[in-house]
Length: 364
Image (cartoon, one colour):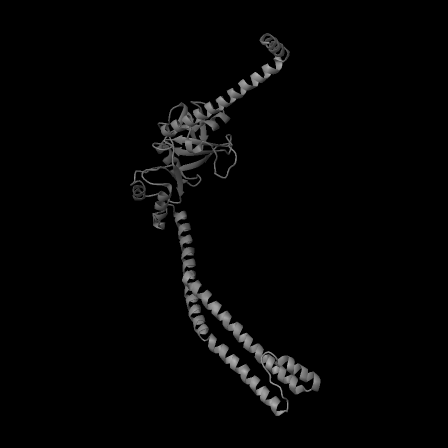
């Protein structure tokens, strides 16, 4: 029996060899693909963590309108947080492309050089590798930006521009039209002082100490900037105009709040007399109704008018007698009833308005 099964198995393998070989190849390729994906993911994770510690990747960054003072920096770094200015200037090339210039990084988001070295003196620069590749720029070549010639001493990248875009709203990397340039602090200050460039961007990168992002954000919000601390004359004038407008708004809100309080007090007085107005209207209607009953009795009509039946009763009497007297009496009672209902609605509205004005005053 075993001999028969063995022959049958061998015959089946020979007959379907292609099918079994393809199935085996599919299994091997599937296992290889899964192992490769997991291996690549692990290498990327480890590589990212390694570069994060080597290049001192930031925990975050923030941009301000006015550079922070030394006192502000001391307050923000008292808990061990590290902060480094990442100020930048956008320089235009002859082809109207943009090179964003920074000072060499010292403690945060350090430059990862693919080749060459950092700029050590004026006229030298490290250029971002994507822009260098798009323009076939190599070590020792010259790049001209902002009317200044730079000798390329290094090619590399930085963590905060891993996706090298000019603005966060950009959806695609344009390597041929935007890149980065890193120079010495002296070269940067010289170009900034020369003028004729776009406004400087005041960005700070930080690495957290014994604090959290939310706590640091609150500290930054608490920093007060006065117009006198702004060095740029035109920017200072802009801030002063904004503050003037803000003061006008605050004064308007204050006046509105005072008016709301006065309105609330007036409506409270009116609301306190609402019941008296309603009682007076009720008494007026009841008195006129009693007078109407007296007049009907004197005219020999054995009828008692009430609030519920006066209209229908007088309408029937008018139709039966064709007397204008009954019609006029019905109209007078209708007018007084309408007046009473109006008083009731008016006082209810006054009560609601008093409550609303009190809430407005409290909210102001």
